[in-house]
Image (cartoon, rainbow, N blue to C red; front, side, top):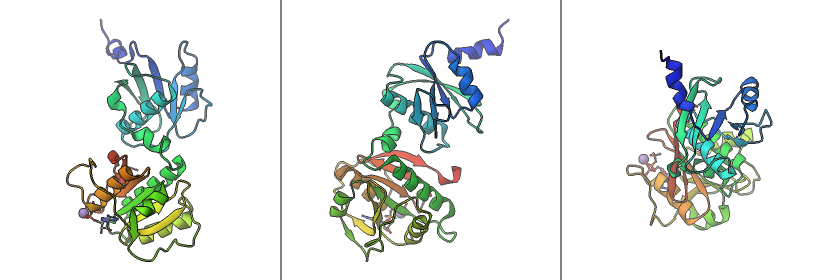
Length: 270
Ligand SMILES: Nc1ncnc2c1ncn2[C@@H]1O[C@H](COP(=O)(O)OP(=O)(O)OP(=O)(O)O)[C@@H](O)[C@H]1O
Ligand SMILES: [Mn+2]
């Protein structure tokens, strides 16, 4: 008689690799014992000193985003190649691993989500810190009201050349960085006002209130998004910056790189 376990085994049959997403110590140890290729660990920290490790800068609540990130990162490290089929063990509902997803490694997995963090001009921690501010701002709004914000991260000199001030720059003489708690408060406070924040590769806040004036030619952003998103998307084509945009109207956080939308997150899920 065929049991459901027999049938479900097909899910992991003939895979070229196993990915463990944020495994606990015992899960990792269990998989270490396997012969053949080692599992790839995808997690915020390499707690178990795995040889094959991809750093997860955000705990993507969307499992597809999490898996895309891990697979893209693994391709980048040479742990898997196009044409492979991998089994991803993930926590869908909670921390411990409770699901297995079988996925082919294809070019379409290459959404640019890993590239956004790993191959941007700005430090990956800076990118993560800006996401954190945008997500928090999206969750709480400003004094309970929804608020929008535009953060342009990296390649700040060029971004400054393609923009102009809307008002005096409160960060003119300061040397403050994203990630400092006080700065996050300031960023939230200033987000009520118009324009973009410009942030350097190392996370220094270069300016607030910048009106971006990139050429919008060749920018491919979804219809229905307005001027803030268009300007944010377009500046990433004209420069090597990335843009992280919180929408006042739909509350989503979006990231652009190379003139393209690469990531969309709902702050309510973080
Ligand atoms: N070129 C620009 N540079 C910097 N900021 C801009 C630019 N264009 C618009 N903004 C900012 O975006 C705000 C919202 O504009 P708009 O509603 O057209 O954008 P949107 O993409 O629909 O964003 P939202 O989803 O937040 O409404 C403006 O009030 C302004 O502060
Ligand atoms: Mn709008």
